[in-house]
Length: 128
Figure 1: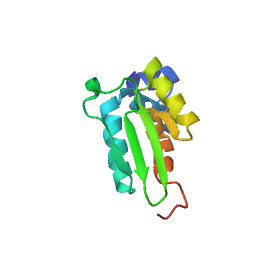
Figure 2 (figure 1 turned 120 degrees about the vertical axis):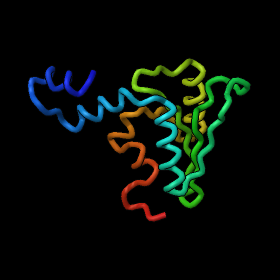
Figure 3 (figure 1 turned 90 degrees about the vertical axis):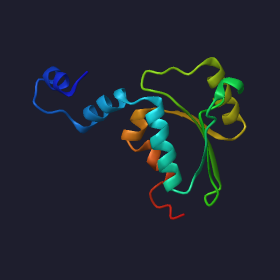
């Protein structure tokens, strides 16, 4: 849906920030999300690992493994578009990592626009 269509549907000449962010999130590709996450992670001192060619790797392993040595954190994230679905293998890996005590979850473009990602990578009040 275009911004003009959203305005017409809303019956006004403007849309809210949340509506605008939802429109932008719906247009973002997984590759664009990954680029934003890795650049932001690196800026905040995280090491970011991504298997560039997963065709020869075990199915379902999360897209990103992020490690922050100073904060002693290790997180796993599967990246999906707003409409993207996780596979059974991806769900299995995320569940197994979580049961093993890791922070493992799915991030979508809206998580970027609502600051979920930046708050995870650099929470308010954290100095290192």
